[in-house]
Image (cartoon, rainbow, N blue to C red; front, top):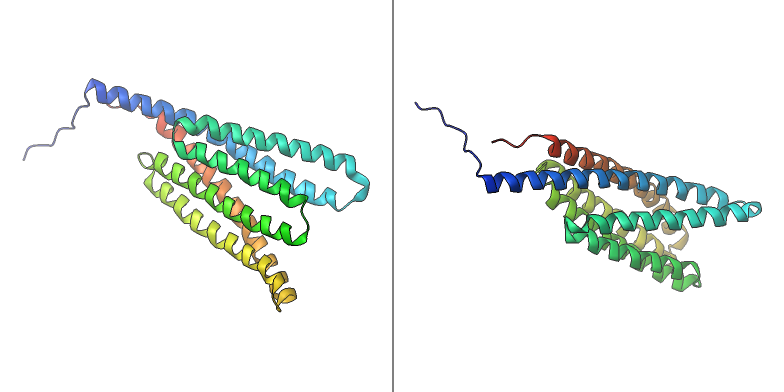
Length: 220
């Protein structure tokens, strides 16, 4: 039996692979930036919730709100910067801008209109996450297919949680308002926190996978 010899890459194929690994290295680094920005965003959200309970810290609340604006702008900048690797990242950034505008209108609207903007924001969140997950999966296919499938599973969990939150809000307008609203918001809010940490975990793993892949030498 003859031993099968490895197929050598042509010079063109080798250069394409080198270029692909270089792009993965850049993407891995920027996804790590996104990871840390997301961590800061979560910590900031917790800080805003705590401070908003105190009427004596209005100045601190304003400062934290402006820091939050800065964090969101940096996050959008990172998404647009990686849009050259996959267009879905750029589309996700555009949807995120619409979601932020929706949040502004929600904060200044009356109760029933506020609920409508909450529902719209939830659907925009799903659209954003769908585009983000699609981009992650496509970029991971030649690197780690199993990790790419994990983003698909994450999207399904995210959709379930957001649909649950929306139904809980709509329950306010039914006869079961008190019970359904309280239980639904409690359960799905906890689930939303868990899903946020899953996203952080996947972001870190994806960044590491991209970086490690970019460092492996291209075979002759």
